[in-house]
Image (cartoon, rainbow, N blue to C red; front, side):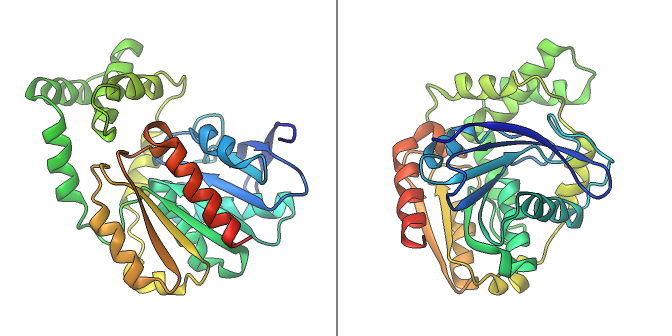
Length: 280
């Protein structure tokens, strides 16, 4: 592995984006786009799977985690920030990996900048349209007790101390994990991240509704659709992308939920290594 480099990159409107780069400087570049929206980079384990053979960049979206504003939380701006990072690092093309909401960002980037995307990895996104919402809501409710739901909803409505904030985040992220024996451990570890959730970014970007059905066919780059089979966001809706995209392959990850690098790291690493090796 090459040296790890932390850097704040200033984009055209003055936002400073926290970035971390690892891997050999001469290797093929990959960028990792975290989920949320309104959260921060948590893809260090994915970078570690790749950076022995790839130059891996990851970053916090504007106004989130260690990055600053201005507070422009449009999807178009998020796409522009991503391409500004590409230009800053001098890459003609790169592999774009997106997780959760970051998968939506990566997909939109791929159809708006098709000549800049070598390959695309769409990890535990939601698929096209809004058909995923009701099954997701039902599965989340199934995985929580009535007491946990009541407590989560009460905390969401009130001002929270730091301890209450950690409790709220833990309850909110608890259903994401397939392994119920470790779900609370993993959710709490994420909840303890010392950053504020950017609720303005969350509200603005969550309302963005890109027309995936119409535009997915514009993504000509080889695409790997990675999805934990036990993610509450249904894999069936993600599978619809195979019929919409000309060069997409679905890769279910058994025994994994929304963060497969936690529950099935060996399987995820093997899938990524094989896909990127095939399209080197």
